[in-house]
Figure 1 (spheres, rainbow, N blue to C red):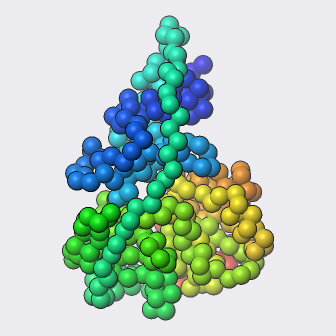
Figure 2: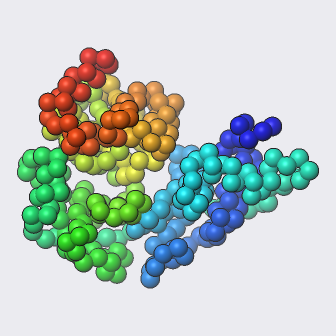
Figure 3: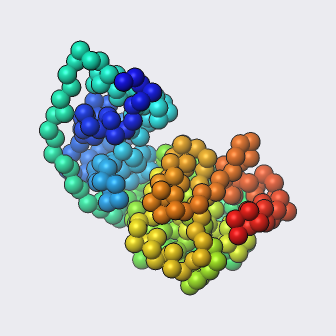
Length: 318
């Protein structure tokens, strides 16, 4: 066997997820802990097992990281997925026939994902906010319907973690009750979002009862912009998430056709492939050199080209 035959499943037959996390610098524990790779005054990280695929994942509630052991290797070593597999294989000598690798028994960590308590203080709209959201020409009614507001303060588990800064504004998406998602548009990748409930389907509460099509996309902005073109859409809380089987069955009754529309990067393609395999959902995606998502396409090409794109997709699939 050579490296070209290596898969995630092959690795996990010989090495546990816990071992991979530990080897690459993160011990698996059953309680919330401080992130050792950034300033973290309060415990904001925890491990849990995903209910869909039973994979062990680590979530940093600040949005710094969320993923499984292979995502962790990609994050820490700044490599792509294939290179991450290669690093794990080399770390545990899995292709060295002279070395016998025994899987070390480790506890099957089963931790329920707990919701973080987020509190916010809203503020008035400033020119910088209008300029930012104006890039996509969102209507005022859309912003109001989807409960998007600029905020001045954020508390995470009663600890203040943010005060408004002109060069780092924050916006809250409110889904009712204490369910919030915070958006930091100018933060580094991996730190743009903070949310209180991983199970929210963004945009679900404004869906029509029934319809001809439904788009499962990867961002709330895309949901909002698709809505302005009369296209019902929802988005899981992160691009690596896919909808649960019971939710798919429910939506499949309400809508004649369901499509996925994610970025054409590794995570987006992987999520669309999972939904196609599990549910038969047809994937849609833009190809380079076009922008990666719907709102970026609108920003680059404008209303007329966006309408043409929509008509082209409808003619091909409906």
